[in-house]
Length: 160
Ligand SMILES: [Zn+2]
Image 1: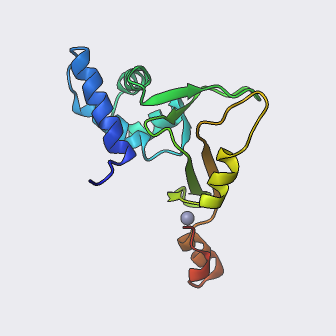
Image 2 (image 1 turned 45 degrees about the vertical axis):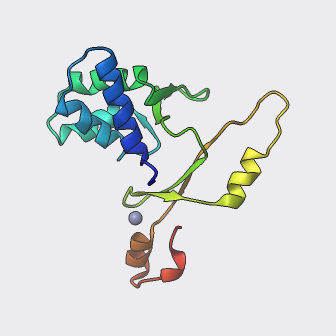
């Protein structure tokens, strides 16, 4: 059986929650959910709102959906200890190690698998903390942007 994508899992969880709470299914919420998966692994409500503007979704729809996704345990609010940041949201449907590479030039996000890094973090023993999973974001430039910059295609620098 093919493993469901995180988006499919999230949509399933959303529909279960809506049915379980006798709420109405609306296409708008599904659009907001789709857009959540186009954002970086951590995002603010403001960033989601910006993205939803292009789809002509109202501010109310965006914030109500965010609240609903948190209640349905699709998203979790993360509060940074340093700085004066707004709450950031993180998708939690897949509680397992996940790595992303984010291109700082075009903003595209790629999934990344690195078994060696995964092992290091998962097998790490901390005195006051037990590791369950992790999210790691690696920044850089994607193949396309690097090629543009160098003026030629360089297949050696593909993020995988
Ligand atoms: Zn790029």
